[in-house]
Length: 477
Ligand code: GDP
Image (cartoon, rainbow, N blue to C red; front, side, top):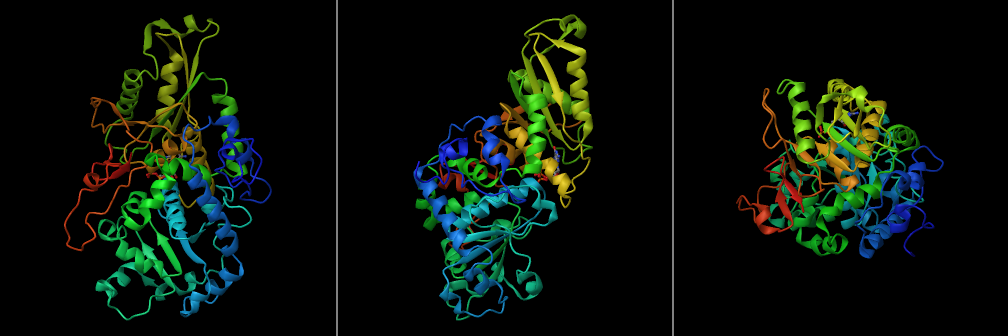
């Protein structure tokens, strides 16, 4: 196809989604060329319009990217650089990290989509904790924000979006808009009341050449609320629940280091299994339910939804081990805690199943706690997210952005474990998500008229619903 840069051999290339070049550490990006070996082709094809938007974006990025003439002009002069920025066509969206890897990947996709919609160039501020994770996504240029970006020196003097809104209320302010602006969309920072989803805010933001974004939210549904973006978005995504699926697959190619871990695990445990089942166990408060309750809940869920067979408690494991040509199912357990994988592994090693299927349980890591500023910790997290996305079916934990990334990349509607208390297994133990899209945990509360009338956006947009796991959140369907 003529929109693709490279000859068609992999899924991304066949679909034209991929830009086809670049790796994080120089040299070629192996995952970009080899992912089709592990990943089934997506049944969701990107529209020609989305592909043309991506190709236009790549072009803009190569013209305006780091150290180009336009970049140097705006950036290296620092925040004091006056208003003659009208002489360049390049505008920027600088992404900064917040929270864990799942949150970061959600906001990277949201930021990328916002950049495309507003003709901005996305530059990411990655520290050592993120530099080893991904290949460069865009051809002929880098998405890494250069170290000499002046903002870090001038941080205190930079205006914020919230202040700008106050100053420009009623649009009658004579004050000039700044060249650099901090756009804080964190959920803790007035997240539900920031009017980012309104055209009047977007008109102001449009005039600012450099936006510095800080967010931990998947704010894509807000973009769909903005009238001036809606037509573009519906042409890009006629299937509204594929936004992260397409954009995430476009942006996130594992670095060669992460790819090696993924490939090794895949060859050792996934390749020969007849079916792969991912179980992501994120316990936000370890003391709430004992490990055994969660194990029982997972078993109840897998049996109810026929992902795993029941155990045959009459027959010892040795009796079945002589059978040939048994089907095997590989269960990938992702969790910070080793107990889950150990208990599940032991259970299926010691017992046979009523169908005689062999169930093998693997847990690649148990980091015990979140260490998001550590590079190797993040590589393990990314490896597990990716492996979960390769599964045929997924069981995930409520409210976890880690699980959201895996499900959307995989194109899977997971079974979400319900909240367990004490020793009681919730009934039902798990609930099927209606969409593979991530949940926007803190969507806006008010409409744009500034009348402070709370709005239920699901009644305005038929393709938005409240999330199964966070009832005040929004998910695209
Ligand atoms: P969330 O907190 O579940 O929404 O997900 P985040 O990814 O934003 O933050 C949790 C972080 O904790 C992850 O990024 C990892 O650093 C770590 N973590 C949580 N669960 C796992 C897991 O199953 N495996 C690994 N390797 N790390 C995990």
